[in-house]
Length: 149
Image (cartoon, rainbow, N blue to C red; front, side, top):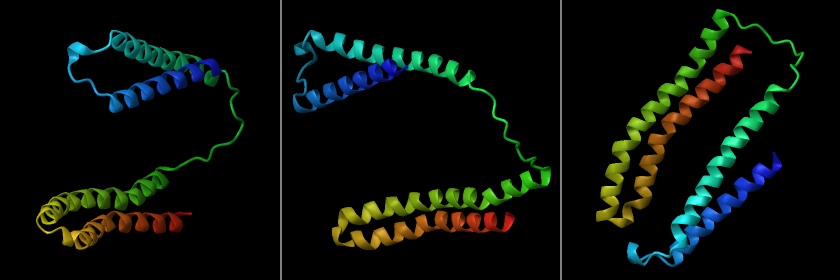
């Protein structure tokens, strides 16, 4: 299995090297592309995808072969499950609200920055206030988890 990881690593390094090469020397026209370009990129991608598929199947076999743990799991009642779902709701709703708030605030701050660049700091404060909504929900969830246990 280690040889598959090494193959994937080499393939990724090859793709990164190709990206760096084309960042330094971009192609001006597709007609002037080197002949080895398509073949090298294709082989790299094929090697990477093939190694991932092989790793998936070999890894699945190793996971299935592991002995079952003898640890006793706690039973979770319906009430406990509903309590855990209820505890997660403040984080869910506050992140949705933060996303709704950040959209217009971010768009307005970008518009202000393009006209007055000196307003950058002030717009960051407003964006931070909008993001703070999600943090407040996370804090409420953590406090409720402390009460649960």
